[in-house]
Image (cartoon, rainbow, N blue to C red):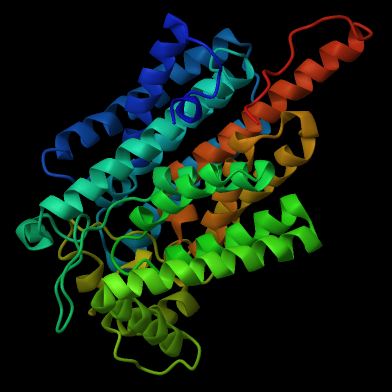
Length: 446
């Protein structure tokens, strides 16, 4: 397991150890992994303030020092931050009468994206190495896995209802509350080991992915599970080809059936409840009828509530209503309503068509960057990065994480963008020297 967590062979240097430690501290704060945990409120708010200070005071001097040269990715992030904060706050004031200050503060998490402005620069300049990022992400995958398992085994969600929807789901008739724990790092680990297993054919990597995967689901986990399975099937056929992919998929299906039968024999009530949840959600979405699933029904009613507002302001949306202002979005629309519950519909409600297209542009940037990379640069890190971005695009149909968790998705865009620019510079230098020995992009683990 040690060689997986530290892809680079041998002992790491002091500089690399410092960088990895800083990444392990900064990434959960920038992803807001523990934002709603007890005692984390002021720490997370302090990180917002620190990132805001960085945007206003540090970043301009950084650009002046480098000759005020802006990449397209940097211009995109600056436009995204500016437009999202200003337009959303203005529209919430226009449509609902919310004071401008509440609208601006409700979008304060967008300052976290500013960190990726300099992250891509540090990566392509060689100050941060891909191996450091890889090791840090895998450490976070396993550490959050262990932490979340311990939380679910040792604590009851009923004891944390006072912390609200951010940490636990609210109880309903026939439904017990459950912890809402962010799955991003664990899912990165799942995709990392799955891709490594597909490339190498080694069972130990598949086993690592299977161990991590259930901890990423939480609650019902229906949308996460379906989206992750779609991504897994895609990368399976992408890396192995059609015929070998079919053979491998058949083997996986057989293994999954055996695991399911064993799990059902050990935990029949839990597995039955999960199956019922999947069937209720499918019945609610496909025919559009009300099912016995309270969560699925709530999403239907929330989507219906949003339609008049979307039709009234289709281009730039209705803005973001702060939960701290006069009862929040529920009071504003007069019904149970959370935009993050209804995926693309919620994005259209808040930001309109222009806002949706602006946020979706991040995937075009990642697509273009991935096309620049040669086969020699590909490995588990880039495989997992692309898989996570594909997952976020698929899962955003239900959850809208490409908007509500853009601080996480844009990190992976910045990662693939920074590596691609770095390789382009290395290739250009190699061509200019006629093939002489020049610094190359460090080989990623394979």
